[in-house]
Image 1 (tube, one colour):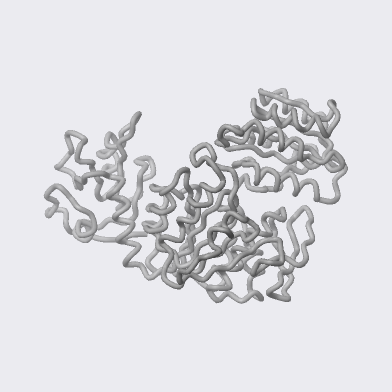
Image 2 (image 1 turned 180 degrees about the vertical axis):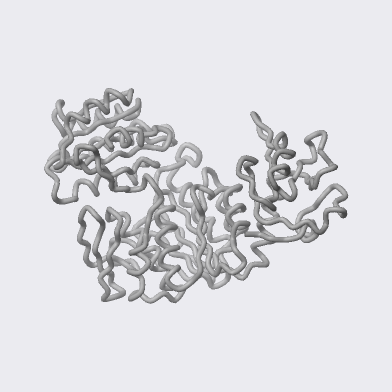
Length: 457
């Protein structure tokens, strides 16, 4: 993590007050939460509409922070303490990260996309760890606050940083990529998330492609080549970046030639190697995420023959195709972290293809932020369900009722159930599960369907 004297920090960000008496103070690490202060931290408060972190500055210093930022327009700064008065604390945090990034001898991988960013980040970090010292974005620290904090948390001897870049509107990826300056970038796919803000999948594709704006000279961009919106925009690309594609079809630079699925993961081969890869993660969509990670690892000099070492150690962030066991012996795929039409279709495909279960149940909730066509997306989701492969469909939420509407065109009425409260859903579900059952639970984060998973366990 960043370790510098206050004098050095003052050369990186513009400070409005006199701090010479604190010049020799050493800061080590950054915190934006006064409850999680470590000794030597620089505390960064933010002034929001409903709360103001400046109220906790004195407490943070008492807990061991070496220094705290203070936004200029906030009255009564405690100038007897080691305070750095700045124009804007968020901009100061970002500038601090920018300058720290510039002095680090670190190679950066940037990852964006509508779905699969975190899973691909985890895979990429694991594969690169076979050869390098790697750090990666933790949790959801992938925005204008989280990414600077991740950069400032990098150790000086870290060789590769794998950084996730999230967005909700145009210009956000542009800012993040120019801050991180990646040598390699991945676009996992273009889905429907953020249609409410960006209006169309074309708009989402344009926003994701902003990741190239910060890509280093002769760097690598790898993207999902089966997505025509990306392919069209890159067809006439005349820049210096190396472009490689991954996907299911043989037109891509890397594609799977064999895939065998079971309930503990996938075994697959690709066109670029004779190695049989063992991925301890469920779903063909995660094989595609693995192809993106493998492309970057290959670019960084990790041999295909060594990649299974990275896959073997893979542990995904919770609630992403997480296979669990219920109290009646049923298996549960907990994919409740988030959902869009693209990712929900992939999850339904996963459970539909898994062998060895006599009863397969879907528990699906609302997909949020889909804009004016949200009802149509949910109805089509229900219509996509194959009655030969799925035995029961449970939905939760008002939009979930639209999934039910579509599902009833494929399944009998006594196979489809809609709920707006979780307790009756859980009670009905518990009557149907046994040791020969697998249950998929998926919805947008705001629906909190992990509560259903917890109840089954």
